[in-house]
Length: 193
Image (cartoon, rainbow, N blue to C red; front, side, top):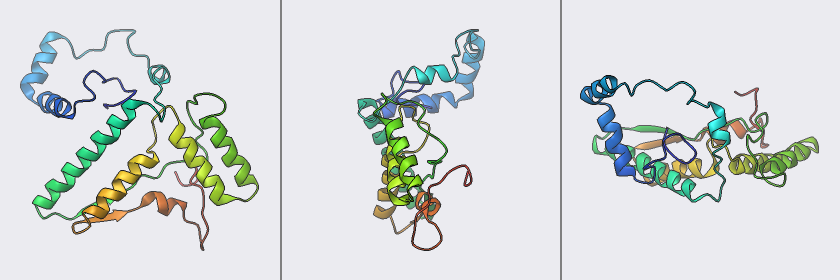
C-alpha cells in the first residue's frame, strides 16, 4: 500500500522505516494501543475513494516512481536471497495486464497516455498487431494511475530471475498472454481476464 500516489507516503522513500513500521504493526501490543487510542476507525468524511488517486497522479517522469522501483527491486531481491539461503526453489512470475480493454485511467494531456492508446486502436484496426501491442504497452506505462504492473516492474522481475537462475524459475506471464497461435502476437484484453 506504500509508494507514489498511495495513502501512505510520509516516509515512503525510506525502505528501512517502512519495514520497521510494518513489523511494529504486526505486534499485538501495537494493535491494542491503536484500538485503545481509537485510531483504528476512519473518521467520517475522510475517505475519498478513487478521487484520492485521481488527485494524486504519478506520471512516468515523477521522481517518486523511481523510489517505488528501487523498493520493489530491493524487496524482491531480499526475498530471493532468503529463499536461496534456505535452499528453496522459487517460481517467479511477471504480471500480465489487460491492455486492450483497459484504457489509461489518467492521461497528462491529450497527447500522452490516451494518444498512445488510440494509436494502438488504430494499429489494431489495420491488422498491425505488433505495433498495436507496443502502443498499448506505452499507454499503460504512461498512465498516471499506477494500478497495473508496468514495463519497469516486469523488467526487474525478469532481470532478478535471470541473475538468480540457479534456484529461480521464471514464468513470463506477460509474454504468455501476448502469444497467439503460431508466430504472431495478441493483445491481452477482457477475454483473457
